[in-house]
Image 1 (cartoon, helix red, strand yellow):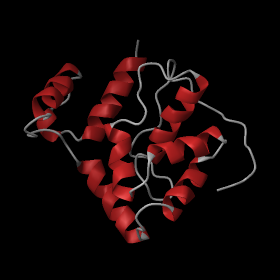
Image 2 (cartoon, one colour):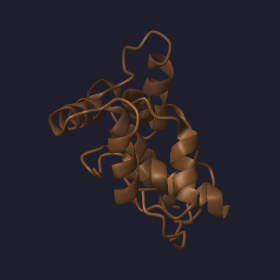
Image 3 (spheres, rainbow, N blue to C red):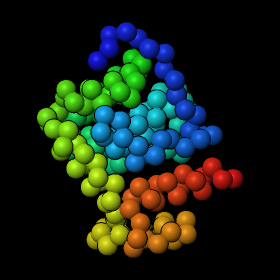
Length: 151
């Protein structure tokens, strides 16, 4: 992690969506979206989004990294690339191949058919006009982002 303090540049999530969870930094899906939300929270511009949430924990738990460490690095001005390096150096060691496979897998994950979350997911997808049986969690999040900022 860089010891130089960088200025924190945060998106205003009341006016624009965070980065797509599909975007990969250092090979990691979710990372840039998680960082956008945390920076916006630090800046007070998070709007309706949440940090340290189940989506963030898909990545954090898989890597065995605590949100608090990522948040501290972001508060110090870490870039997305520096957060990827932080993940590489902390928690459970993963190879580039494992990171790629995990990112590909999580990008396809769905809650459709899930015993506890499926009904909620299906209802939210239908509200957005997407087919829950053909939609991933990422499809749903992107559709929700588009709907939120189409107003």
